[in-house]
Image 1 (cartoon, rainbow, N blue to C red):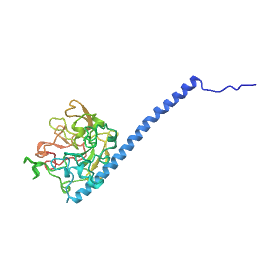
Image 2 (cartoon, rainbow, N blue to C red):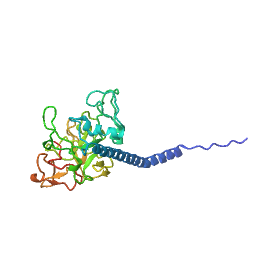
Image 3 (cartoon, rainbow, N blue to C red):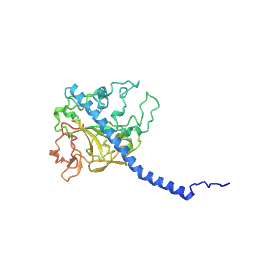
Image 4 (tube, rainbow, N blue to C red):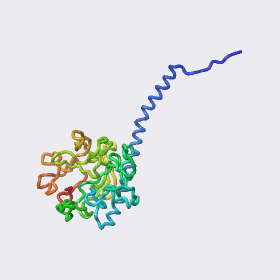
Length: 299
């Protein structure tokens, strides 16, 4: 009677196989991560394209008026709310207060938003993190400066008005809505302006801190939807931007101001006067149009 010897892996052979698998995984992971990031970039651009179509329809129905960067004092013209009837209808979520009619939907966010921490306890409560986040932000300067508007708030103070499309030149270069800094770039910080504010700008305030700015989450660039409705992945020279309280002292990568002084240093334009009278010129390193002071500039 003969016995066949069973063939089996030796310990050395098993370790070699494990090593080969580990090397293959290490080689494949960057490619898989790159493919995942590319898919997010494409989906993000698709979402912004939908918002562009909604913005065009809104302007057509409002006799040339454009969306507005924030909710004060009228929720109805606020871009985050005003686009809903053109994309998904109006959905009531049983909330109360200022956010009662807002729809927190994926078409108003970069796909990275789905990865954010969700602290919402129940449907009727607005969360402090995921719901408060704004991965898309509107150009804060796309409005009439309060000195050129007849609108007043409840206290009688002058406020900015909606801009008309006819006021803009070169709509293919004017920034409308795009990637803004949020939790994925600054961290989970409750109440952080760069996370929660629905608007953004690139211009440097005299204090140099606190302004919500574009978020460079797509390979060092940001998807931008322009006023004419087209979407581009924009990559420009980056700088460190300071975060506002409660994250003072921290920074994130963004872009330079669209204005420079006589020495070539990026600065804020002056909303109550002409940049040329202050010796300012457009920054050649910022080819996008964000403002046209003094008429079109955030108050």
